[in-house]
Image (tube, rainbow over all chains, first blue to last red; front, side, top):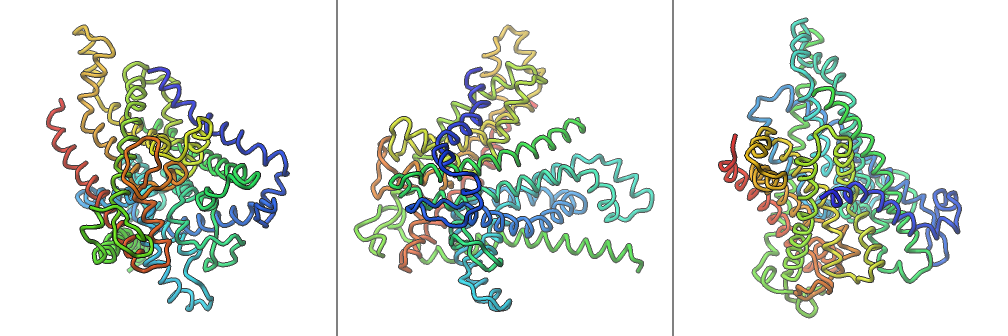
Length: 282
Length: 283
């Protein structure tokens, strides 16, 4: 039992190490600048510029967070501070279901609903030609996918704020919203920040749905209507040919190493915050 | 009305609005998938594998993918259950509750939970290269069980934490060893939660595509051999949608409907089974 448990603790290190060893060939032949600041991606000619993918990932993730965070926070505050108990309990299964829907299904939905709307309505309205497969489509689909993460954790954090704190504020004559704004949210701020970071990291590593709706063009996007190519999509799209071109497999595993490290830092960071909060409550 | 009232009303309105948006997005997704998928549904979809020219719009179904996904997710769930069980028993029965080691393990599992599935796919793939395994059911099972192991063990851990310590102490005083107390008392008491954890993990496994794209490959045949490539439902959807033929894309919608129904079914089943099993536990 101890061995299996130790394995659980070591798995993370093993994964980092394995991916690092596999991506060493490319790290040895190229400088970091050649890899991360170059925009040209043509593996057969030996050019591995990751910049379009990194920037693409950032755009899509950012779009998702910008859409999701206000909606989720307002919903979480509504469910925890305003709604009656039955509504809060009623809301739980739909949120769980939203978390359970596979990402491919989100992708299909994005292709049949979001992409056409952007192509036919939103794009022309803002005067830009677009195929619909864009940063915005990825952002919308991802935002829906991270709703449950952010709402769920924010609800827990809000529930951990002591009830007396609210009573004091209300007794001093504050309205409910003032209580929320000045007291509850201020207390819950670190936890909510952690919830957002967790949502962000989920969006950062999401593969299939993004792959299906963002168009996958390896160029720097200039607007939300431009297509983008994210790091996870890069890995998923090229697994077939990666063994036939030198350094290609190494480059793709370097991409997964980047993903792993980024999500690791984000997750570790927010877990530390959440753990500290729950200790203070307990 | 004074400013405070207006502000209060304004934000209440915003909150109700955003809750509605979120709720409606779920309804919209389910309805859209249903509307698009239902016309393309037929019996052949779930009773036949792909026939010749399936990806050009000819006859066939996705039985290969349904069976493949079930075998893969089932195998991964079993494997990861036998990894998770010792971990959670060790954390909750053998270690002191305030131990540093258990805090570290829980922390690592939480972090692992957040690692994207494509990374498990890539890692699984490097493992397979190391051991000389080709894309196969076995490879897929390894990658998916790595993916669902943290989910399952953390979910099991949370319910085991809830088991009252007094129960453990009572069993010790009756002469039970730690293993007996763990397996016969804690495990049984936590049974509803454990079943939920297993089902959640199974649902995650059956719906994940990014981790199997490297590791399980794809195949048009129904096969249970551990060393052959196997089709999975999410990848079948992905490939069908990627073809230029409308008939095949329609099948992608039907397949998404099948997958969504499986997931909804698992989630309803989970709720029913937990309610049923709860009557066997001591409170």
